[in-house]
Length: 96
Image 1 (spheres, helix red, strand yellow):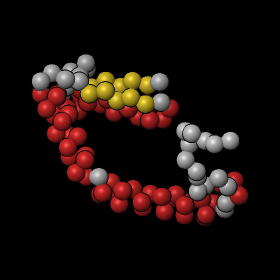
Image 2 (cartoon, helix red, strand yellow):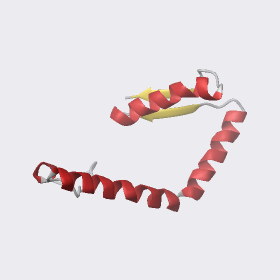
Image 3 (cartoon, rainbow, N blue to C red):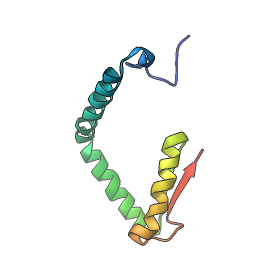
Image 4 (cartoon, helix red, strand yellow):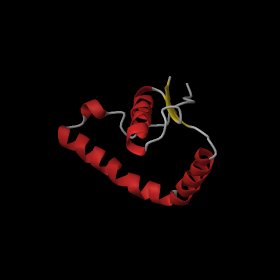
């Protein structure tokens, strides 16, 4: 059966790894994040400029996600009013 919504995992055998192997794999994956982000910094810059333009003309920013990503979006959006002084209806978190 072909999977259509999941990628193959390098970690299908987590239950067979030692604690040291687990934390070494977590550390290796963590190290890959800055390199991946560095490659898309121009795209992130473009997105920021677009969001600022829209927010300046009354637009809103929506965080949307399911599971942990949804919970983190709700948490982050709830911090925007006290941290950045935006009204509560400008940055909105939506969780599935």
